[in-house]
Image (tube, rainbow, N blue to C red; front, side):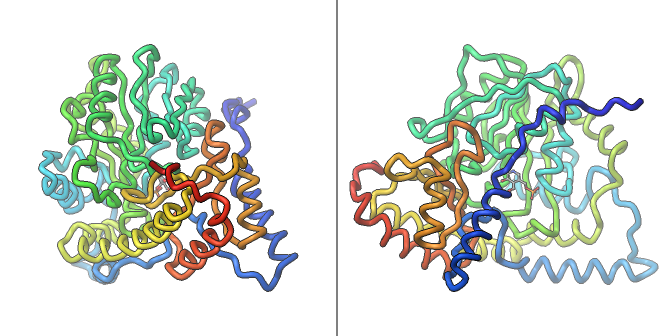
Length: 404
Ligand code: PLP
């Protein structure tokens, strides 16, 4: 009799998005005339930029010609894309060699797969509230989870706790769901901690393209000592609208060694065993993102989302609603007014304004009482939602000092 991976029975059921869908369905049934305003979606709403589309078409044409056709691609990524990403890092004065770049089908895939590098006996420290996949992927592997709560006090970007010993450490900056960013100084503390304890940091940089403050690091490798203790996982999903096209990349420095094993070489071995590479067509489309024209065009799209975020931050500022994020991140994490719990605030917004957001509790127990808004929706819906929030809460929450 086969023995299944019993760790799956330890996974907690996630009813978050199911419950949201049920509540929205019931509301629509009762109020068919009311328009819904979507501020909860974590998916992008703008299409791929012109330059990416042009390259995708070219790549499709390549596949039709005897001389230009591509079969299996190299498992770790096409050299043209690994080089383009290495150059992208060079643009930020970071030396990342092409063979330190691994091409993947997205950050989610990679966040799960990369755990193959680590023994099951390692602990995984997860700063919460967090992207739920971090916890679930480690529960599936049977690892001990260290839930590391972060709070508004430290802007949801905490320092390490020297009294806790962790092996694998997740840091997501800019953060989903809180929109928080880690400063250079905070990241330097985590890098020091990891090097001291022999830990490895998994740095999720999926939202790096949303950073606008010069002093906020886009990459963990901007921190001295990170090449000895960190892996960076990135994605074109939010940077360039690749959520449905799928492409990500992972940086594993060649100087990352633990117990005589080199993690870069281990990952080469893993990829050559477990994948046959990412589609030529998609890699070609992705390479357009790293051209001058591609960079200009993706920034135009990101600016639309940034405009949405600004509409929301201006509104929250004007009514004194406390929040984190929205400046260097597409997420805004709001403290629910009147000490409402996350789900109560969800019901309040849906019933009174048709606004759909995401209850904070879906991202960790310590996030009850918070609520996530995203800026990935349309400008029109965001403007309408902002107006309604002002009407609903303007009289209620007018203590502007609360945001200081
Ligand atoms: N990491 C974080 C923090 C995310 O929020 C997401 C998607 O929402 C991902 C990774 C997954 O990205 P991808 O679409 O590349 O799988």
